[in-house]
Image (cartoon, rainbow, N blue to C red):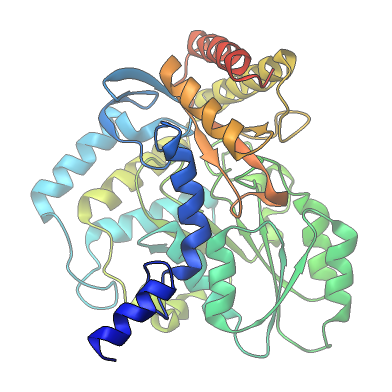
Amino acid sequence: MSEQSAKAATAESGGAPAGDLFSKFDGIIQTRENLLSQGAEDPFGLVMEKVLSPTRAICNGRDTILLGTYNYMGMTFDPDVIAAGKEALEKYGSGTTGSRVLNGTYQGHVEVEAALREFYAMDHAMVFSTGYQANLGIISTIAGKGDYIVLDIDSHASIWDGCAMGNAEVVPFRHNDLEAMEKRLRRIPEGAGKLVVLEGVYSMLGDVAPLKEMVAIAKKYGAMVLVDEAHSMGFIGPNGRGVAEEQGVIDDVDFIIGTFSKSVGTVGGFCVSNHPKFEIMRLVCRPYVFTASLPPSVVATAATSIRKLIQGGDKRAHLWENSKRLHGGLKDLGFALGTDHPQSAIVAVIMPDLEHGAAMWEALLHEGLYVNLARPPATPAGMTLLRCSLCAEHSAEEVETILGMFERAGKAVGII
């Protein structure tokens, strides 16, 4: 194309060249510009200048209570966890520079997988560089062309991306709907490979899946079951193994996916399983084979944290107290919430629209409180949410302070 033709095409498209690959994002760009043009702070660009503890940080020069970090068990500043990371950094260096199947397996990787096997009382554990990669790798590898994946329509993006990468037939069903799930399974051709993918806690509304009934239906139709317990590991269940443990079906689940970036307090992902052929995944799972392994300091902190979570009963009890108090307090103030009663450490506050949500988010930040602003398409049913994730390190006094902040901000913005 000549320079003159290019200029003409650019002028016709309002400043972007013809065939601009970014044009698909114009709606999102405009929405963001509209929010920022009103003088609002960018809710998706917050910088934490200094992190003081699992529950507090300096944001915009202000001491801020953190209520949107998923640091459920508050392990990020645990002295034993930090000491383990420092020791590994000094002994093994800053990174592995290689895949697990080449030079990327250090003693720490073996130990963190042993800690996971102990935590879940399962035969096999496989660690990935992120939780996203765990879902991407496991789902895309075990369910391929000609197989069927039946999944909840509110599933996390990593689950959907794992389905797409594996090229299996994807059959979604209405959120937490047992009848709809069974109808989908009934229609799958007999003899076809079937995988049911569920989550213990759904991250947007903080609601829990009826896993006991769902697993029974899946097994009735000969399907394997994968449960993502990212938002329940560490505090739900008698031993913190998640919703599958709480509902008594952990031994009937074929694969459990989890992450280190929530209750464990670092970064990474994993899959645990009792399947006798599971170890072959280390050779056939592309997101595992072709990714550099986690740094030694990360796996050392993860292994230490996981072993401490085994003895985390007191922390689990306190986190539940925090969740019940925040949920009940916000409900009493008149806020619309994502669940009728507290089901997890996530409390979702429903906003009338994105504009009110952004205004409320900013008002809370000025009060000294950070929460997540969640918007479509990430949220179900086109909702805008202020998503609160509690921590076992939040004191009872901090929860009361948070309720006061919500009350003042809600009245100022006109939400309550």
